[in-house]
Each structure stands twice: as structure tokens, then as C-alpha cells.
Image: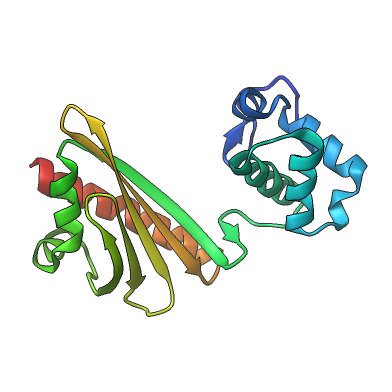
Length: 187
């Protein structure tokens, strides 16, 4: 990996993005962590090192660690400590309240969501939903971010998936479902 590349990605982040936020490129992080012996460390030990020795903030500590684990074959794409997880998002031309209702109200949800069987565990009006998916095993978190001018970003995170195959399947599923929601609300 070239240290100056802006197109090389690790954990979905380009060299330019990681360098802008941490002061180092992926190649530099990989070399630093290899030299420190991180190939034998736990996830938590790598996070602690990145913070303690390099002063990187919480979100980027995790990103650097996950990127390192993926680059060194210790973690697959979408793999987390609790299985596999994916995310999908869409910006939709509608107020946050409209989109929250489209998720929260079962009658509206049935109009756009294929396989709408789910259990809402917690709802924070116009902010988020915590959902147990219809399989009873996986969790879906939905976040709503007002973007101004009557637009809202909807972010879906589906966690505790069994394997990379299921993660890929659900990534495609959520992309399609958000498209259906967008068509319903905007159309």
C-alpha cells in the first residue's frame, strides 16, 4: 500500500481520511502496529496502544484497530465482536417525523418494508429505534438525522448476523428497503 494514496482503503477508509484524522496513513499505522507487536495483541490491547501512545480519539482508535485487524487477516469485512454487522443509509426528502412514523407505525411499515415482522424494544421519538429483527436473534438500530431543507438521513445498522454471507445479503436487503421507503415517502 502506498503511503500517499487517496484511493487505497482499509476498513472502508481511504489513506487521506485516516491521515486527516490521525496524522498517519494506513501504511504508517500498519508498520507502527507491526513493530509494536500488535499481531499478538487483543483488540482491546491495540485500542489502548493507539490511544496511549498516539493520542487518537475513541472513534478513530476503533477504526485504526479494525483496519489493522482486517489488513492482517484477523477480522473479515463486516465482522464485529458479536458476529457480523452492516449499515445502510439514505437521505430522503421528508421531515424526520414522517420517517420516524414510517418505521414506528406498523401499518405504514407494511407498505414499504418486505418482511416487516420485528419488535421495537426502544423508541426515541424522531431520533432512533432499537429493534429485534423477526428472526429473534439479530438487532437493528435505526437513526434519524435531520439534514435541513426538509431532508432526513436514515441510517440502519443490522448487528449480530451469523456470517459474512448473511451480512452481504442483509446489506443488499437494507439498501433495497431504504429505496422503497424513499419511493413511498417522496412519491
